[in-house]
Image 1: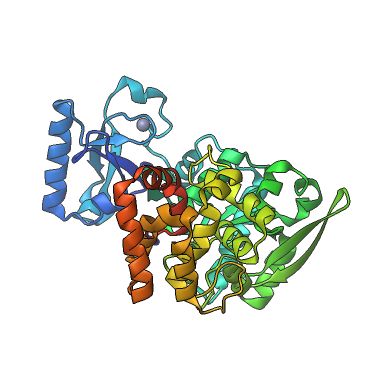
Image 2 (image 1 turned 135 degrees about the vertical axis):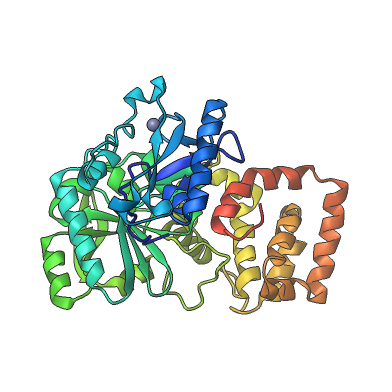
Length: 439
Ligand SMILES: [Zn+2]
């Protein structure tokens, strides 16, 4: 889906609600619904779409106005296509759709469609220039296998159009979000959550020329402090250097507080530094553990025993998964701050909190946690994580460890209230940190 074949017709409605299975509809790409259809399937879809509309149970609805959609086709002669690649969705005559931004397709050029797709976002000329420069240099970078702009990405009945979406040779995807205005907290956490859900790495990109004015703004501080004071920026210099190098060059900006001032330095770095920043390069990167900057900030702080830094990272991470009512104090009260490093150890086999244990003394670390009365009620979570990979299952199955796990599970079975409460309270955050946990 990253670089679909160009369709024969420009599609304004490139994401629609497919209501054929559920009345509320699943978000779906028009391209994946229409492009694969052969001539016969296209005719069938047009028929069922019209029939369902007449029956007042539309098969497809608009993501913007929720109005019913029908399928229209360009002629075979003009499009040189028989099947669904000459088809697009359009609004059925419907009062609700009158004001819909997506409701005037007739005669629109692709540029006009693009302009409309911003839907109220004020995309200034500078934003366009920086975005265009990024696209230009990403195309030149040998490590990048495809680049898309404003292409919809769907996750969990939401969609976003990342400014630039790049797929790397490694298979990792990076969404570059060019941010010129100080973002609201809701924007920051919404994007962090969305991209975590889609397993796409999110990279905020600032305007290097505006750093002195932008860095003190709270919205940008809310981005770079939880990233360890680091943030990336682009400008004409980075563009020129990228062109010279034939590969992406970004400014990596490091911010520090000196007395009551912000100071920053920057250096031009390549995609390898971006990958390292996003946790995409770690050879021992564990697929079961989130590696984005927020998750790493929290896990690194826990590994160092830096409670203050862990608390700061925790607040943003919790917000990024929609949890707004839990604070670091709750995490400490519940033992969340102590069980998370244990879960990391269970998955990786390595120490993830300061202690006297050797780095690879996983069994001793697990056993000591399982013996701690205050952590006993986490044992069901330990068991779930322990069953999530072959390596973790091996660690949990060691006799001394399994005896403690099963003993604790029996105790929880007799008095499950606290374990139930812990799991319910912490599930979204645990799922954020350990994305492979079952739902
Ligand atoms: Zn609409």
